[in-house]
Length: 374
Image 1 (cartoon, rainbow, N blue to C red):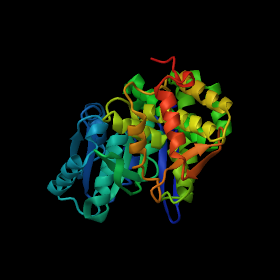
Image 2: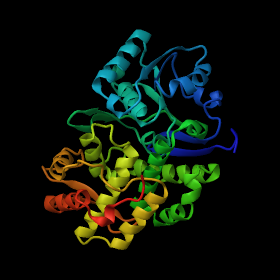
Image 3: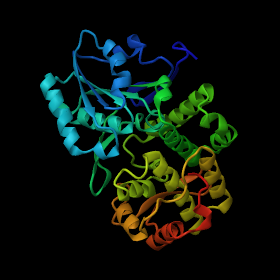
């Protein structure tokens, strides 16, 4: 695959649409993405890990513009209001007008914060996603969800603000640490587990190729996941119904991330554990069979992902954090569960005692959730 072998997926939102480009050499394909910038001001938001690797290449495409950069420290803990304020000050210093563009160069943390800052500046300016992690390529860069964390919970503040384009240059994955790469695979599995049993079987057949980062297999996996998500977003942009299904494992996972102060688990790792917990809860409620949970766990383990909870987690504390989830309504839990692989559904008023029992079994040594992975 080279710079001419680019997969293009359109995200169509009524009269609005934007492209997701997936391929190699896209950061250097400046004529492609520069055309998406409409004004003369640009702010590149990145972090201290990614910027030394790729900022110079992006800067070459900004020649002739009045632009600057704003760098975050790396990590989920830095997706906060203090850094949103600093990003907005950077836009003010730049003199950014309403036709300015924010470019998010990095993973999900950078994309979420950059998108939120773009949504806030002058009530909304353009932004472009340049994801450099697998997780961001297959999930957070597509669909327009932006946000920041509070001490009380993850992504409790945010806005729906769609990008002008998504540039997924898979060459950037070459510098991605193995742990972060594996975390991104959790979001690929999630898409199949929600609504595509055929894709789930394809992932089972290609797990080893994905684990070793085979290029053709990886591009196909990214494209399949993005196509699925693009379809869901087109039908339900602001998560009034179907789009909530994309949160399979996330209510459990966000609670785990918050309880671990955003340092114990990567987001994808938390989602992997959360999906297994959601499957176990579905079993407990009589919605699904143990065989489907076993298939899910085996695939996650083959991809190098954890399925066991970190030590020192407290069931009651996790349940308390789950009550703050954005999907909840009327003071009751509203979880994404399933009736087996490819058959996720929204379950309102989920029995908290069943949730607590599922958590307690996982924390206190339920053999089914013990992982052989390090």
